[in-house]
Image 1 (spheres, rainbow, N blue to C red):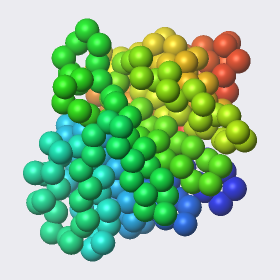
Image 2 (spheres, rainbow, N blue to C red; image 1 turned 60 degrees about the vertical axis):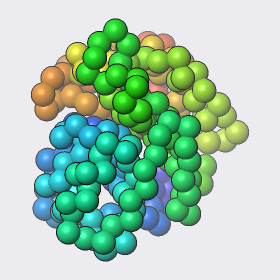
Image 3 (cartoon, one colour; image 1 turned 90 degrees about the vertical axis):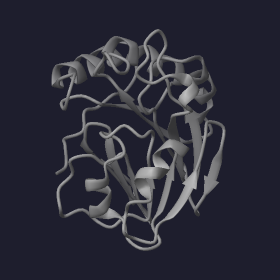
Length: 221
């Protein structure tokens, strides 16, 4: 999917590549061998399907910036490249010529992703484009702080998990979309372990019934 000179690709599961002047990956997992080198990698948390050394080794190079919560550091130090590590927690922001804000991601009423772990989602700002990758999360009160990103002429693209059990399901993800009011909502975190394409389709249909533009991205290998 393209927004002017910026392209976003779904890599499957919770993985995305955002390519403009810089190449940004978020949670790459089970990707192919032909992907471009990363300038920046964003890791939401240390679970193996979000912080995969096998996949990171395919895309990082000397000088790649890797942004992550502290508990992912022990994995990243095993990469045999001279990467630049930046440890973050909710509320932080970093600027690599592209501004990145760090937002909380956690479960409510289940223990797969406890709030006290400090795991995260990210907001990536590229010109008037704003991408929100929610991470592994339920609908949480802090999402109300994201509402303003779709204003002031911004294109606000929300990448929301829909698979259920470990994250929001399709119905809950629609509630999140209603809170944050994106220009476009894109489902993720399905088709690998839990959740199917039917969950993604349900999410899109429900979003549209509430006047929210939503699309399913074709997986790029």
